Image (cartoon, rainbow, N blue to C red):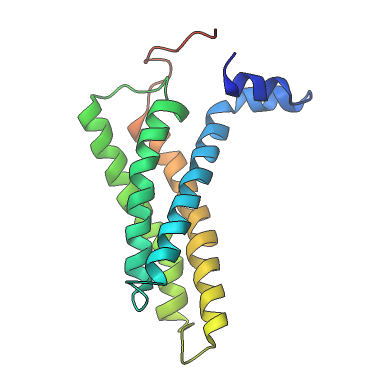
Length: 169
């Protein structure tokens, strides 16, 4: 029994049927959680050290690192039974869509900093940091993940059950 199957077995009915029906979405969300932690850690590390005056650059670099991890986890776990494309084509589409996702993830932070001018000296350092976190790590993530979920299923991994499934042990 896989880890996912044993976790699903612990969910009470009727929620278990819902979780099984939406297993792919749950896995995608879990991968998103892992990559969100990576993105947040890299963003905060860069923003508080070498890129302290360039939060948007720090955000873009953090999302790039998280995107590489996301490709591997999504291909091999979330969408492991999907495919329909040659691997090079699939990877190219994944990273192109992720590039659009980077713009979508970064747009709320750019608006917060440069449109609404939520930065020092206009606002306090505490306000700036809270605005950066909420716009970059919360709102940006929600917008970007919704877009990527739709686009990955539509363009990158369009066909269901084309890759070999690992039989349960």
